Amino acid sequence: MGMMERIQEIRERMIRQLDSAENRQALEDIRVSLLGKKGDLTALLRSMGQLSPEERPAAGQLINEAREHMTELLEKRAAEIRAVEMAVALKRERLDVTEPAPLPRVGSEHPIHLVMNDLVECFTGMGFEVLEGPEVELDHYNFELMNIPKNHPARDAQDTFYVDDNIVLRTHTSPMQARAMLTRRPPIRVICPGRVYRADEVDATHSPVFHQMEGLVIDRDVNMADLRGTLNAFARKIYGEGIETRFRPSFFPFTEPSTEVDLTCAACHGSGCRICKNTGWIEVLGAGMVNPRVLEMCGIDSSVYSGFAFGIGMERIAMLRYGISDMRLLYEGDARFLGQFR
Ligand code: DAH
Image (cartoon, rainbow, N blue to C red; front, side, top):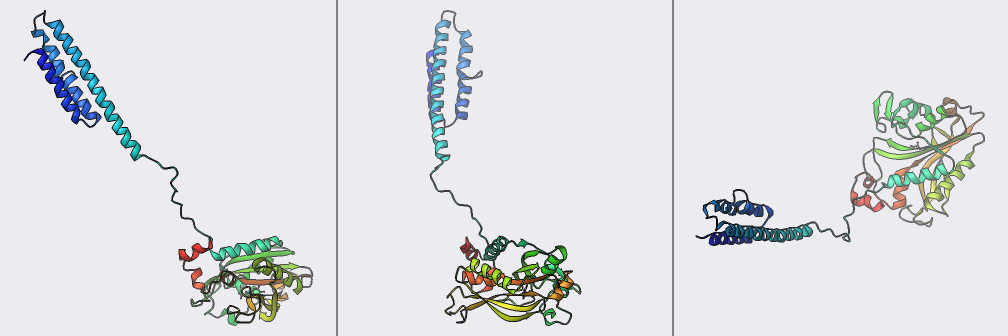
């Protein structure tokens, strides 16, 4: 075979191989096998020593032209492969900036906390300080200082979770009254929101854990009218204008006199409905003038100072406000229920 034919054969081989090469590595393999140091065309160049001196220049020129042409073919194919690769990458990495992003799942505030925050805002607006205290409480604060002596029915083991003889899970937020009086000088204005515990069976209106907010005001000349004005302001802030309070005589060991306080039913505005059992009123809290015995036990001179206290049941406020008929919904953590308060 003459030089011309051998060059032609190598060139045609390259063209066939380039046709089926799909990536850069394949191109590189072709280049090495034909144009590389040990490649076929290079071998041909080396074999020129066998030619006669007259033949060499023409053969050399042919081989060099072939080399240039083949290098061009390689580059052309490389450009085609790059274009394909680019097209694939563009398609794969395409980003539609107008596509709506999936929203992160956001939580919602619990209805108890919504109510609690509203009450805190309402009372801090009237000059009250927020005071929080322990849920695991000494019997001394929970009962003794609240004038609930040994043998009082409220101490009955079926109501109270005892940790030991002297320690209980607080059954109300009232012990915070004692904690406030023992750490502050009058005038005192505090609210104390928090969890309380009672050994109750779970049903639509009872839970062993629930929430209260205690209020306490101690100063000179504090009287029942101050209590009434404060609770009226609270009622209207939470439920709106036109809501009245009604005081009914009651008994609590830590207040004297004591009262249970009803609000105009916010559902029917007092005309009577299922929620208020046709009375037009809803009972929401207990209150009264702080018993002088409690003042004295907590180091406050009852001949100089007087005060009022109240305890609000948070669940009741939340259930009335949001029309929740079963208290268990507040504790089961069902996201479909809780998500409605977003
Ligand atoms: N501690 C009472 C309870 O848990 C509620 C209460 C009634 C609190 C009258 C008060 C009050 O401060 O004056 O049932």
